[in-house]
Length: 217
Image (tube, rainbow, N blue to C red; front, side):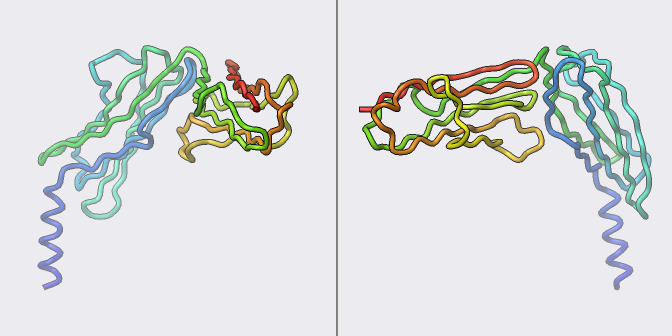
């Protein structure tokens, strides 16, 4: 009976379409940076066909490298690495890893966005003009997108830099995260502490800032 069950399982396995996955779903790069993504194809036989295709048949300088091996009976693995050594803006697009065998096909995509230079976009999470009563607390919060990663952040009040009372952190732990949050915590504001509060952030390409006008009644 165990042998019969094994034969049935093996027969069902053999009739499966390939299983396809990629190492990253999306990538953001500057011109000149390297793009590299791995496609993993699993099938019951080494006769499986696989390839990288750029959607819309756009031209690209991508190169592919293949490596394969068996992991026991009916378990064939192939790696298809796609590389663009110096990505350009016109390399942006959707790349599909496609595989097929006699029973069908499977595919998975990854998206590449190439920008000509880095950027920072700041999004205040509240109105930049704020009215508070004497003795009240207020949190000034911004979210921002930055690529490459931010190198320097600071909060400034009337040309004086804060050394504490603020925190800055990525919005996600994902490796591809480009969004961050910065918060300045102002406690028990006095009437003479109204004025302009500015958040500044920079990376290797650009710098950006946003200013809050705080009025204490």
